[in-house]
Length: 443
Image (cartoon, rainbow, N blue to C red; front, side, top):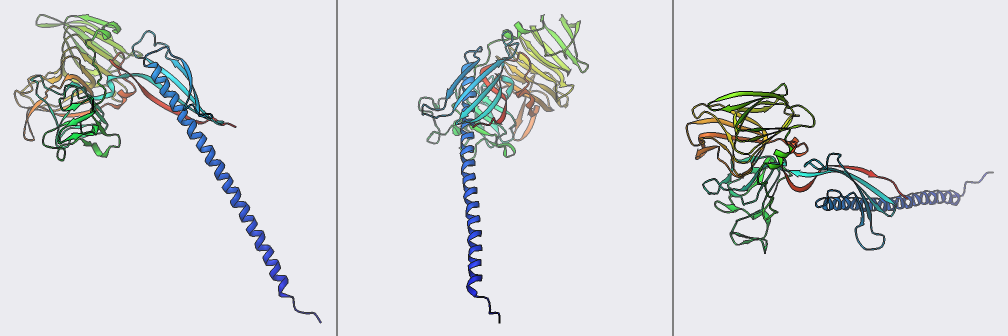
């Protein structure tokens, strides 16, 4: 007769099975922990290699700022043993020796305990064309401060060498900086501002109309790129248009008018007494661009095709719409040694359109007879405005425009990477593009 199975054998088998499962799980957990630890160390080494590569880019920009011929270098993040290191190679553009628009390709490789990370940057001299709005001082020709008010909106970089006066809540989409030159409330030695007590935050280095609670610059459409900082470095403007004269493809003596055409040409006429006489027709769509210069006053209008820079020793008059044939491609820079003047009838309401980055070295961008006649419509500017003093485009009573124009200024963002050829530069360097090639592997 067969006996019943003994319970102890079954329990032993179950115990062995559970021990096997637990051992497998423990081994798996240990392997995962080991893998996670190894991955964490590799990530840490890769991150430190990235910091080293960034340090190499910073070294290149520092050296190139005073030596355009600098080509290579090495360094490390600290003097400690095993500290991440970097190596940098710089390749200049072929036309750097002869052109003012300097450009370099900078390749920096960071190393950390076998890990490598490589960055490639395009570095260039910073163009004034990167500013949506720039002034040497925020005063009118009558030497009175001009306020940014609630109705004002600007969607590009803004700077003044003077100081800003704020009334209400003007809105900005990018960085807003000031040097506070001539501002008796700014103490550069203590980096402080005397208003409603002593302010140490650069975000408060501006004049208010009432107080900080009611008057402050704010972000346009909640832009993450907005910030305000006073007490920053002064950026000097060129004194004259001499560099454009030297670089010009074609120069003209005396007062001239330029009528740009969408077929890629410009018709040039010279003023003889009270009439205009045809001079020539030239192409504007040639590569890499074309530069014109007038020793005298100039009148410009029409439809621009190409990459064009225009300079004059006196005023530049915008005597009609001045627009791009293709706004996604064409670029125009106007540099007047004196004023940039919008000419229009004081008795007609008609919007005006201007596509250009404009620079008035010793004057203003302004509307002729801005305080006469009637409301003329909206002044649409697609580009940027750089001027020594802020010019007037109209008059206002309360919230109503009485004479001249209301403003619609939009920054042309392609100017940041494709400024007009031979347009003035600030003398500082900027990164136009940055490519992260990722990890290059390692031991």
